[in-house]
Length: 237
Image (tube, rainbow, N blue to C red; front, side):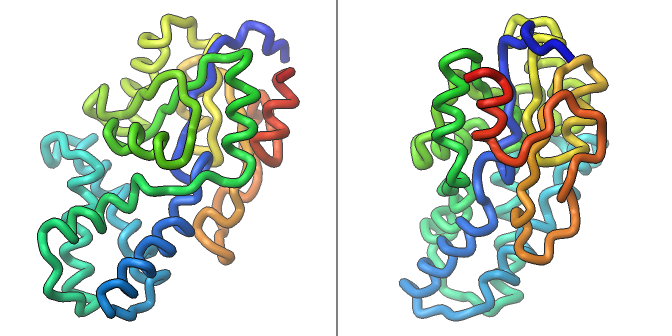
């Protein structure tokens, strides 16, 4: 397929561009050491992540009013602190702990590849993460976005159609001029349904060594590569 008309690349961020699980486990471990707390941080982080999709689903279905991902994670954090027997944290410490979701490190190929891609394309996030989170993450990880578009702009979460449509509108492009880049097949399927181009790359350890999902392309995506450096090469940068 001719991709010469693509002008902008929108990226899923958590898992595709940054290693959220490894980063938060390391962050939580360091926090625990500073407080003299020793728990199974891998189990803690995996349990923390379980609130993500259900929380967003309740927003998208109207069961609850708009709620940021920060608030969704904070509610779950309070539950986990009790479950894991972590007590006596101040409000400031809980706030810092919850902000671990913005102190995420990029996968090794991310920054070099994004830097290459930026020479030719507009680069934007298209993430369910909060706007402030993505801004602070870009500072922390050195991610060279041209702009940050998030679900918060639409007051709905992916895969709600309004999120993809808003990104296309804000970028001032036709759908086929925007390519969605993700390590998650469901995200690409919804992007494609709105006429966007698609690029898939696997992140087989996003959920740890026992990951069973999104290990391979499950659709006829426009570009299928093994990493972001290969995407940069495939798109001529």
